[in-house]
Length: 50
Image (cartoon, rainbow, N blue to C red):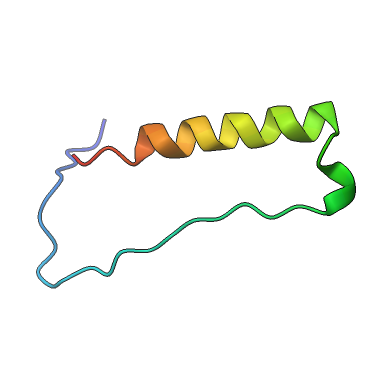
């Protein structure tokens, strides 16, 4: 393994918003719904501050 560390950035880091976009014809597609739900779950899990 590599000796990795989490450190504070030496300058302010701007916040940003992530968004999902998809064609309207996929609004009711079960596979698209599943993928969007997985992506939102993972994004919310990663949004927890360190």
